[in-house]
Amino acid sequence: MQVFNSVDDLIQSSREFHFMDAELITSNIVNCFGNKEIKSYQVLADKYTNPIFSFWIDTTRYVYRYPSDKTLGIIDRETEKIANDIAETLGLDNSGIWMNNDGHKISRYIVNYRFFDYEVKKDIELALDMMHTLHDSGQLTGTPYDIMGEIDRLWAQNKDYATSVFTNIFSIRKAVKSIYEDLDYDNAEKVLCHNDIYARNVLITFDVNYLIDWEFSKDGHPAFDLASLFISSEYSDYEINRILKMYLRHEFDDKIIKEYYSYFAVATLFWLLWALNLDKNGRDMETEIKQYHKHLMKFIKKVKSLS
Image (tube, rainbow, N blue to C red; front, side):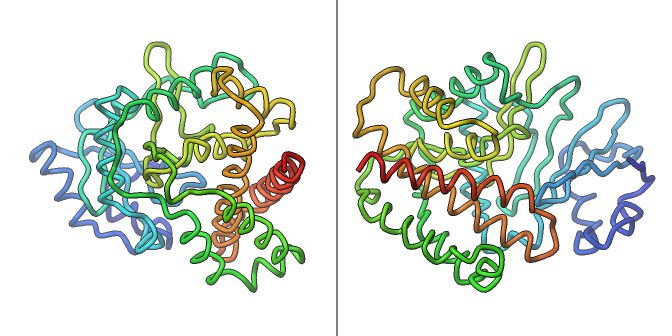
């Protein structure tokens, strides 16, 4: 990717970046590192919601995440910061250097990493270990995840577009709402959930692993983290059930299995509507939309079979 000599040049390189404030970026970097020379900038974002770029000071490379104007009123940045701080104390993400309550973030640039691989058994075990570290920590952000409220908000914004893509979206939504109503989510014990665990948010290196990007983190049901992992995969019904049982550590019965699949359906409807919203606004999400829809239909079918 192209390297720029100034943050102004980087901002002018794409209309997607024109909303960014060069003075604010520079001020935040100076507050972290003092008046050291920033040698160059390089855009890193690739199918991310927020602009992400790296910069060099001396011979060290860092990453800057600029909160997108499209996430205003959608992402709770104060809760994200709380989750980031907890993740650091739990050893899940030690890449952060600085973050404020507006969502601006500076991190270390991680070298020689690879993304999580859905087909590698050790990677699956790692992801499940990360979930257990998070879910069993007893730590909370203090912000409950109102997932049905988020679904209703996205539905109101994208109903017409969703209908143009899936003629059966009304019946899908009705089925998921019925599933949700059978759950006692308001009174369920909540754990800290990342809510966006998938390949690109699990970075694996030789000696340290990272669970990054805590934007969607809130206190909810642990099934939400498993759902985010599953819906971006090509896993079969058998593989999903096997990994779920690995997570549950063989402490399960039909009631627990139904509970988790019910939450899988609810979480997947949220991500389907999220992807449709991005697609409507110009970002190509065709692959994700098809994938999420396929898994959602399977989850709904599984819940019905367990009823």
